[in-house]
Length: 419
Image (cartoon, one colour):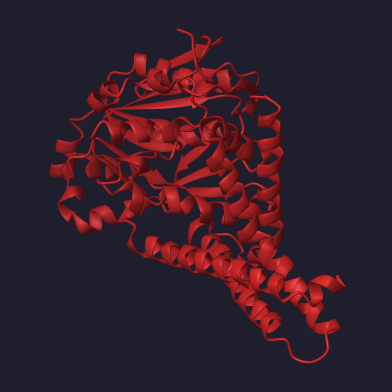
């Protein structure tokens, strides 16, 4: 420690790292603020286009039949709320196709009960017992639901998602038709189930926001930014068939990102909107979320995965470590030390911005208690060590990803085989 204390070059390097982190955090919070302010809102559509809400226009829109496909695996706790919110929609020309994806709880019975009591809307209840080799569970369930559908507009919605407004589908279809879109997706309000989710999710969303922000998705020139929020997206039947349906991404675990990318790659028009005031979805806040992200990323781009891991470490853990080093150095050194004071100041500002970014996510995205922003250091540590843990798993050739009670052996699309 004595060597570190008196080595100017080490402190110069630490100051350089700190300034880099500060610049990145300035960019992150600035882009986050701009994105929140400029992103289109689903619930503002009728206000911007008042004619869409009139009965004449509404009747015209409802000539387009919407097939709602709901894949459900062990969702007995959430499925009733989801189906109730769909049945109460003011858009009447719908059919609901609920797919029981090999559930071992009461999901199948719930679907059967709704099918009996609401025969005009729930037209089919598909019961899957097995899935073909090479398919992920949700992709297979969505595909089977699609095969039973008859609408020229498809709405894919998760069984743990609730439409909190009765006009959600009307607004979404109005967006799709009047703006001549091929697909539309809405970012939901994520419901955190525990404190760990409230601690880790704000930082995780801040990082993901750079790649999957509504503004980037809506940029027609950026063909790599295609993304769908898997809990709610509508797509025309024509576009869905043209990209190869769910079969084209059959082995993908993060299927919503893969489908969104194909939609933009095939030059279809995709738009994303903020739907936090109309759509609520449960966030499955556990380690498997990181596993689902890291394992596919590692096998598709190993170098990039290491880069992301190092970046997260430098952005979330280093500022706190360097702040501690600054305080310790000032306490044991004699006299003023300009480099140490700069190091202290820079990291104090960086940590302030880091916590502010979490606060913004909690306040405007998650609608949770902003006090959880103070736990950002813990959230950063969890995310960083999660990346490290699953990279080690991947390096050991362990391709297993556990998601929704299933174990998948992930292979990149170019290596995947099967029917």
